[in-house]
Amino acid sequence: MMLAFKELKKSYAGRTVVDIKDLKIEAGETIGLVGNNGAGKTTLFRILLDLIRPDSGEILSKEVNVAGSSEWKNYTASYLDEGFLIDYLTPEEYFIFIGSLNNLSIADVSEYLKNYEEFFNGEILNRGKYIRDFSKGNQNKVGIAAALMQKPELLVLDEPFANLDPTTQIRLKSHIKALKSSQRLTTLISSHDLNHVTDVCDRIILLEKGIVIKDFYTDENSLKELEAYFSE
Ligand SMILES: Nc1ncnc2c1ncn2[C@@H]1O[C@H](COP(=O)(O)OP(=O)(O)OP(=O)(O)O)[C@@H](O)[C@H]1O
Image 1: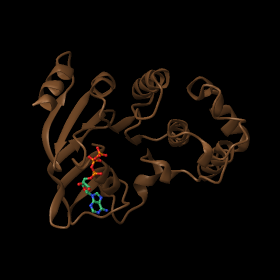
Image 2 (image 1 turned 30 degrees about the vertical axis):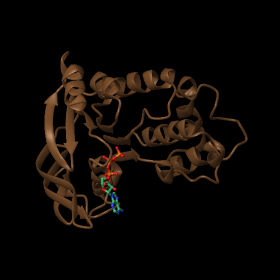
Image 3 (image 1 turned 90 degrees about the vertical axis):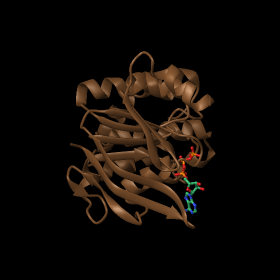
């Protein structure tokens, strides 16, 4: 098993934001986390990445509690927001830096980036600009490509389709699908785009006020069911 969430609770100012009793995620699953604003998706990801600590309970990654261990960092990559970038670097400098943390030479990084020419659509590399001067969508592209450069077994992306143009959204979806079949990548994606999540994910987890309201494997009816749920 890749992940197990056990009796996990987090509140802010007396309001429960995450309350997950028992949730398991198998290696190779592509999970779509959906839920209205404030449902607790980002908080859950932050606990998973040990950026914040739960009030009680734990998340086990390959059977080890993520809080108080760093083993999971060897196989987990994530992009939650632009706070994950270093905005005074150019994208090239940032990729080289992330590459160096993963024992990749500058030549390895350039070779890797060749696979992303289409994804970058000519807008990221060799622009002579710092990351801070790119649009949010283009910053997303840098963050996602840098996360994937780490060849993770577990990938965590917070609203990856937001701010991306339709062409890039479609390319990202096929890329995630390809990584799932070639490398058995486990992916957690939060999204407000029901179309994209039902298309790319094989399992959907619906959160409301931090509680898992629905948890199902996607089929041809999933989009309709989710739309019906959210239009109530
Ligand atoms: N540091 C914090 N201090 C106080 N409240 C917080 C903090 N972080 C999150 N919250 C609250 O926790 C709740 C859940 O927030 P979270 O960002 O996890 O939801 P989300 O599902 O990711 O929402 P969105 O779809 O808007 O991104 C919200 O009500 C938010 O205001």
